[in-house]
Length: 284
Image 1 (cartoon, one colour):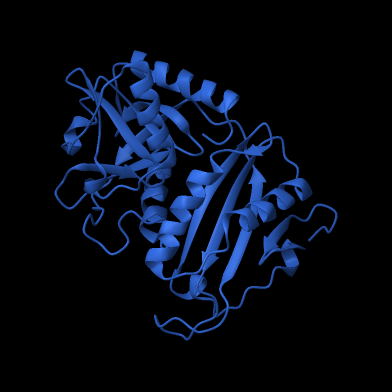
Image 2 (cartoon, rainbow, N blue to C red):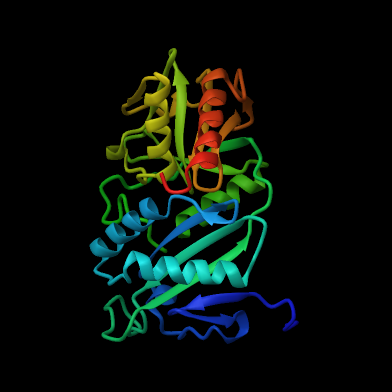
């Protein structure tokens, strides 16, 4: 590896070259997916919505029984790494695992692992094609509402989406209702109303989702959080994804079927409002 171009990471608070970032092969995050994480992004080189992401990370860690460094410490480590790895805009990932453990699901007693990485964030498209997948999100599972490193089903679903020329895969839940994407929440304009699956559907409580709900209220756009049939997505007048990286991203097609508008008028208003928010406030 070229030392001059080697990336650096923050491992347990120390900035080290990628090749020197030693994580045990017995780390529970590797062996059984025992970990939690958050993906953040920068605007103008500053981390956006740090406090909201930290609170969700803390909730995930608390439920999983993982100890978390305080917000100020993790933020300082992330900021230090961003200074060492200065990209025009960055994707920032904070991962906390159970640390070294036995070769079983039983967690060990040693220290946990905290890893922070950054990578350059290129231009994000404003529209996206999606597919639906037959595999259901378990809306009654032990990990509902948590952002854990157990992402195998997301990897499989997103690979299918890429193979079919789409950029996101949409899951139903066990009741056959519209749920979420592999890394995004979903909104549809169906029967003339803006709707989104409620958290009881099993979807992740997305940070961008919550901001969209707040912006819609400011704009006087009513959002109905209600169970939706999966079929409402391809039949919608317009639809969009929300996520940290995608922001508000219009959907132009579902399973190869074009939607009437991408972006439609409501999507356009909310996308513009979200952009304005990022320009005026870095930690809303």
